[in-house]
Image 1 (tube, rainbow, N blue to C red):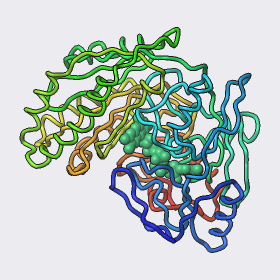
Image 2 (cartoon, protein in one colour; image 1 turned 30 degrees about the vertical axis):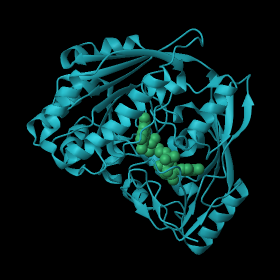
Image 3 (cartoon, helix red, strand yellow; image 1 turned 90 degrees about the vertical axis):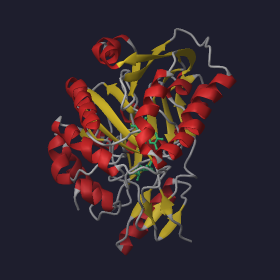
Length: 433
Ligand SMILES: Cc1cc2nc3c(=O)[nH]c(=O)nc-3n(C[C@H](O)[C@H](O)[C@H](O)COP(=O)(O)OP(=O)(O)OC[C@H]3O[C@@H](n4cnc5c(N)ncnc54)[C@H](O)[C@@H]3O)c2cc1C
């Protein structure tokens, strides 16, 4: 039976010829071998949280639903091996029960492990920012139906590339992550003016473990969130009421209702942003790390995010603000600003350079195209690399110069998937045929 695949933002849909839910590696191998013989394609999807069509299936769609759960915990090596279709929120809960934690993560936990890491999903700050950079082992089914494992000593080239593989190298079936003892974070949120936030940006990023900054377009106001590690697990979370009010009601229900209003009357957005940004208030709390890093996101939006070299970040942000101010565009969603240390993954947006991320959002029912088209040239002019899972217009020809090891990745793809069993339109655009 077939079904329509749709991503979370509703921007992309696909009608795969066949849908399967493999329960083990052998079932994945069988799907790949059959597709290869038929000259067709296979795509393992995650939870569809990419805004791009990177996971859009054409031939057979493989659902990750039967490939979840922790397989092994090695407390000497401090690693955890899990099935690749495990949702991040499930892993986080199971790790917490084991007294363990990932080092860092992005701001939601809905994605599958393979889905999140295949596009380089990242958080901010820390020693390693992306989930991919925390991977130290993997098992993958290649386009020729071979099952290959990779670690730092066995097939190290595959481990290097497979951590951000864009779904182009094979179907990941198992992933091993480096973990740490469970830790807690103290979160402090402080409203600031533009000059205060940008003037102290570098010092703040150096002084705190994680810094996440939000600028409210059409205003001079930002919200600065800092997260710092505590020495123990003695935490003071927000009360249930405050958490519901801030994270469920204000950030989701009320913000969603507001967007319906402003979509109908965009001219009120600047005045509204002025008012709401003046109402921002400071708050502090502490909790186990994954509950501080992530929060529910119920208001459906579209997003473009670029990583520019760290040293170019503030200039790119200032230019983005000038372009928005000079345009007629009215934007409700804040611009999110994060930083990451360089990692060693060839196709990672942070590969080989400390990075500064700028993320632009619009509500699902607002037209994102003009907004993103205004800002993408600024990001490109600063040698920006687009998030593989977020809206962008780049192609293989202009992405290749942005990634020094792009050709190496293409050569590995040729070796692992010579018949392009894992191809789709998005991969043809960003990697070539
Ligand atoms: C509300 C929201 C918040 C977000 N927050 C962040 C954030 O803080 N930081 C950030 O960097 N990104 C963020 N993202 C982007 C998101 O993390 C990425 O797009 C991520 O790739 C989505 O994971 P997924 O499980 O939905 O995978 P999908 O989007 O379904 O798939 C992504 C890719 O993974 C591949 N894939 C899935 N499973 C396998 C497998 N088993 N083997 C091989 N390939 C596989 C797919 O084929 C596809 O190529 C956010 C997105 C949303 C909607």
